[in-house]
Amino acid sequence: MGKVRAAVVGQAINCADTSSRDAALPDFDPPPRVLLTGATSQIGRALMPMLHAQGHRVVALSRAEQAPEDLSVEWHRVDLAEGWPDVTACEWLISFGPMQALANALSTLSAAPCQWLVATSSMSAESKRNSIVAEDRALSASLRQAESALITQCERLGIGWTVLRPTMIYGLGVDENLSLIARRALQTRLFPYPKGQGLRQPVHAEDVALAALHAMDNSSAQGKIIEIGGGERIRIDDMFRRLRDDMPVWTMPLPVPRWLMQLAGKSMPKLRGALSRVDDDLVANNHQLTMLLDVHPRGFSPDVTRWLEVKR
Image 1 (cartoon, rainbow, N blue to C red):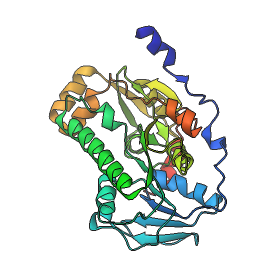
Image 2: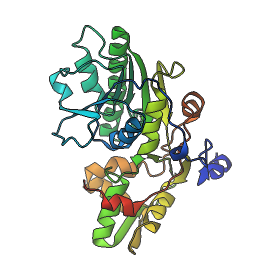
Image 3: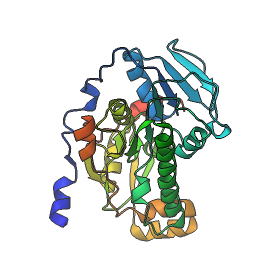
């Protein structure tokens, strides 16, 4: 295990030297009408320009009021927990929001509101299944239950479906993981990070959005749950070092020893799960992603200066 592990740490995988930013978008003629939930999420923000470039008409759902900036996007303030919205049926439904709420809303319908559906879940469905932390195991179970509920409704209504399971998502400065750490370090000039040996495979939001687009109307991807990680597997401490190296200001590195992590886990229950996994490999198998969707995610490439410019 040690030799195999050493061979992949910090190395590109799944042809990731070819950035998916340069990949051609799939061609649809005419471009289908798209219903997009979770439109203001980081993946939704990444997908919008791709849909615009292809000339899609987008019906975007958000729980908050949105000011229309693009006439090709029809915004609706909707909470799927309250039921299915009164919107025109679309050929595609792409969902980056809560799966259980979507499944519950679909369960109220007698006719399909779309022909194809792509939804994002999370690799936490598997990686936290056997966690020592009860809350993590509960999250894993709820994700798998939501996936199953959504699949059941799709099959009942005759909707072609694909579920994507991304690893930790970063890239647009609105995530609650790496960009939050960078903002705190900018304020304090201190950069604490855990000393661990577990592998991480962070995936850029644009790569997840591209995978969703490639999955639409793709018979090879229909009826499949597809994992998606970044194009590089790196040790957790190396991931944080690379993030710190990209900071626009100098910050003091503060590697957190194991005894202090254990103490923090006991005194701060919210951190217990994350700290308990510093030596675990949280990675994805990108085989189906590359073979079925022809998506090759980029390696881990933080752009902290860009993240800090984003209004949250």
